Length: 113
Image (cartoon, rainbow, N blue to C red; front, side, top):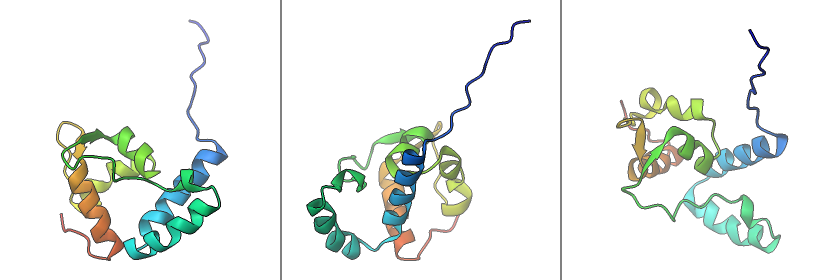
């Protein structure tokens, strides 16, 4: 038997910080995001602001793609069916449904499963 080493992925501090920024940004109401975005851009920190507008509502994304786009862990995305009623189809989530749930979550109105 060989002693093969298995790499266990752990996010760097920078990646974890960016995930936290994405998570906190998603908690802000859209009006507040619009108000803060120009100030953040002026400080040359726009790269840290999540940009979801480039997705088509009918895009179907994997758990890993959503986690990367939204600054979440894959395990957090896997909890969505029970938490937000989002149902994956063949392991993928429709972006329009994710965006709707995100907006409802910011308003404190979650869809029931």
